Length: 349
Image (tube, rainbow, N blue to C red; front, side):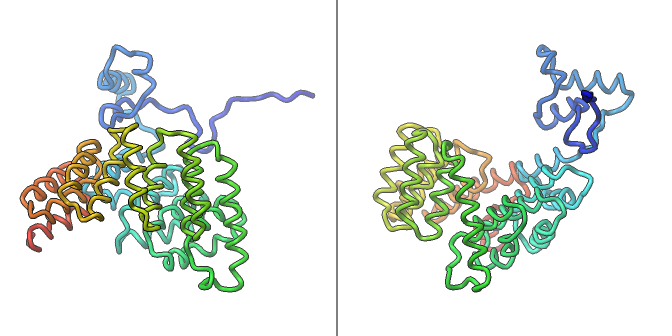
């Protein structure tokens, strides 16, 4: 007997017909169904129409857009918002996982315990986001936080744990967990090789091989990424960084210049070139590249931080303060820029 398919409202609120939110479009620049059809109207018009029909502002089950926007713009209350979203079990796992991933750049005494909580969250998406957020930590801390995932029943979590622990010296691994690490590493490599028709997976392979000391396989993977897509900026950046780590900055410089010939407006390439000039002790040549990177990506607070620090090193502290102040107007909650401002002021608030 044939079965019938029925359209139902799924209990997961991220699987649904959404209430249009043109009010969020007007505030955050997000898309909405109203102005997708009424292309001659503004989001503010659609928001007013909905308010008139409903008798109130439109609402939905999900309340995370403003928090993620705050994280992207460096709002002063970002940490508080992220922590609240991560702990809100009523919000979709994918949104909470995104919030956890934002902690990668915001690890402090306040947020680190939340990352630890996320590693034990009941939602595997949140646990996955937490594993990816471990990257800035020393490998020993990453081991303490993630080694239990090496034998997790979910392959994706095993693979992410292997990625998080790349570079862990094998002689420091407990004997009973070496096999788990090897098996999890095999899961990670298999996943990347399955998608090796994409340059991102090849770069992931290159970084994994490099962290584990296989320099030949690493360089080959980076080179294959560039053959696959000669315009893909991350391949140039990561290959150049690999050359830096292996004492081959001359080759790294050549790679960056090749990339800039194809992508002259790539901020990441300009930034990497500026850092390379600093390693060459050529600060006058580094400053224009670092400035260009900041100008091409004005919302990237890291590029701004490095440029300001270079200006300060060059004795141009007043200019450095202007760069930092401009960044803090855009991202008032950025902790790194705040710390640098204190340094430039000689520790005075």
